[in-house]
Length: 316
Image 1 (cartoon, rainbow, N blue to C red):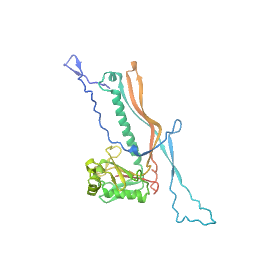
Image 2: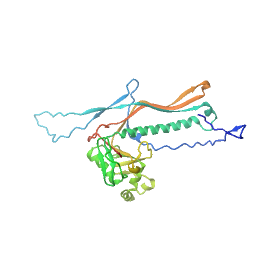
Image 3: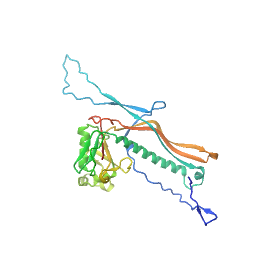
Image 4: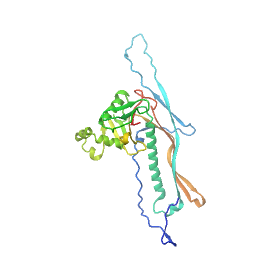
């Protein structure tokens, strides 16, 4: 691929290239937020296979009575354990460039390639983490301002026809806390990551507006939803990770989850690599990022209280 565009100064004869500004304007990328909330597993190391096995323990059933009889030994009860595997895969991307572009271009070609590859890597991690979240069994569709469909088989039970509001947040929080017995993610709060469409729905809810007049008057000025019903909201505009869904894209897809919802396995840590110069005189070069990684929801296969701890908000 040519690194420069040349134009004829006259219909036939000498050619010229116009002077280029030394300021480089990089395209903005979507906000990436999911990687802040994954549980990182240690690297497997060489020759360790492609699957990381996670050991899980289920909560013990509470008994009706724990009183002991003096002449009878302490009762023994089963301690349930299970496993789930994370399969790691190679991931990577590369950008080629030439020695000519590196020597003659007015900008730092290698530096710009590195920065753009770093952005691409961040987007990839965000998308893969969100994809793992989407495999959870608890699905929540918004069918009205105060109605919803909750299913536990990993398939949405309805098409969402309304956007998020405070009333729906209350239902989700109650389901996580009262039904699933899910532990909060951090600081006593559950975490809610949503496409901006849902964040807008929450901020346009009169209940939210009235409440924040007294609790945090600057929230609307700063476009921050903050905490609602023990859920700390995080906004994302990364549509590949969380899209606009439902009738006419009315709802912003999202996830509300508790402690240790997603695990991230590393067989080879992501790194940046420079391909040694190739061809005659080393004219052809490339910079890439590469790693061997995997994501999985820790209780992906369960909707049981004490195990499942994530609600996927979306639509058929």
